[in-house]
Length: 308
Picture 1 (cartoon, one colour):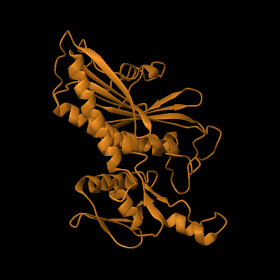
Picture 2 (tube, rainbow, N blue to C red):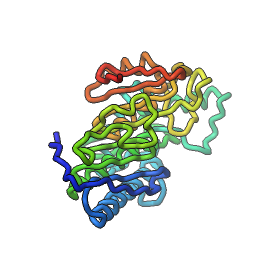
Picture 3 (cartoon, rainbow, N blue to C red):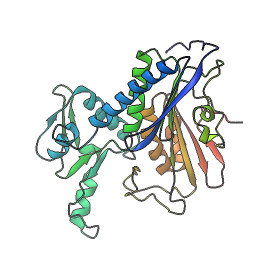
């Protein structure tokens, strides 16, 4: 575990907002020099941009495009970074019983919901049909028309990488806000720990705004269909189990974890599972916590969180 260093009395928080990966990123670093902070921002932006290109499915040199294009045909040799990300994604899929799933069916394919054969094809398109070979460093999508996307955990991974390069550059304290998902390390000026509200001023009115999140990540998923009995499978960025779960009483789910990638990946699955099943899952995990707010603004927390 990284040691928390004392912040200089002259230190302040420098912030830079930039649009990357289709979302608003805000990068905050604690230091004394504006010029130093500008160099830090450039370093973080360059890394996030690198990850965005790495995870893109566009371009002939795109590894993801090659994997998708070879679906049902042959395995594709991938670079170690992509392989590890896919492997971790599969582990989360297994952990959530398919609630998190990086696979989808290619747009433009003829799979009308009224067709029994077509429905079978869609059902077969899931994480269990991704074959990874650690020795050969290959990835194979068994079903023709299968695709993979990191829409649900890509921003979290990019935030983790930005934090990593900033720490290498000597940034001992900071925050990466990736579209409302937070990743913090170190302390605020005055040697105060980061809280949800301190890391993101827009969340001051949240019932868990005072929760300490120094050296942690927080990702929030909001239920935009409060009156629905199940989350629509076609909702962008939402991954649901094949049979669906009632979610009408959930307003939002916030996952706290040691990495933004894990928090980002777990938020929507817990939202889709409902209060009891979601908390039961989180309570089985190490270094993962959850705060659930229902449509009456009642707060439910996993066993590792206490909110006054």
